[in-house]
Image 1 (cartoon, rainbow, N blue to C red):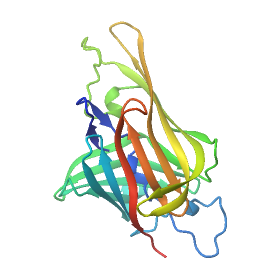
Image 2: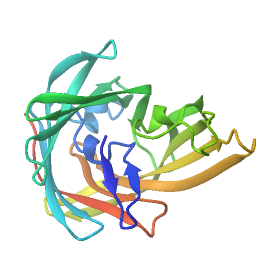
Image 3: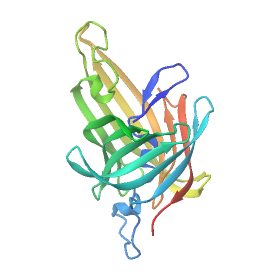
Image 4: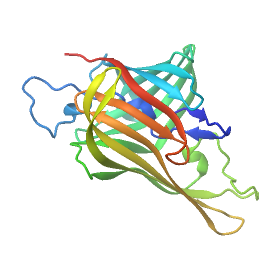
Length: 257
């Protein structure tokens, strides 16, 4: 989970692990024709790799590589590992821990490493259900739904005293995913039939100083999921669709047989 800087200098926590799932999937076998099988969407074979061309708000560019590599007991759950590296951040990598339950892909947390040294661990207060399958247009589900939690539960680097009155505040946070359409998307790696998924956030902060609630809603990202491929494109926003933080497009991918 990375903190990005927006043009105004504010920070944005990419809760959805944006590009993370660009390939959390499991290639189907030759005799597997069941569309209800998660492998039809998420090739999670060990060694699968995806490379993305990424453009940030300031027109700077980078390449992000994600590779599935091994398993680990994380938060008392046996998880597969997605390792992400970026050309503009040499020596840094993020290891994200996910489970394919057979009906959904859920993220349990991450670890950040610098030059091989662990520098940060984050365990999600709830598994974050980023994809369910089979995907159908109009489908909706909760990615995460938290009530009366400390703000630092969602944003580890933030203060819990949001209103600055010396008393910790609490918040509700809900992310909802909706499949908006099915369409062909063209990226450097080719053209893919994909499902466009919209991720919508609603945050309610319960202010201790006034007893009132501060409510904010925004679209965080759009992801285009290509069955048998993974994420082929993602666009991430700050506060609404007019403020694009980053755009990632699949450049190449390598999936096991």
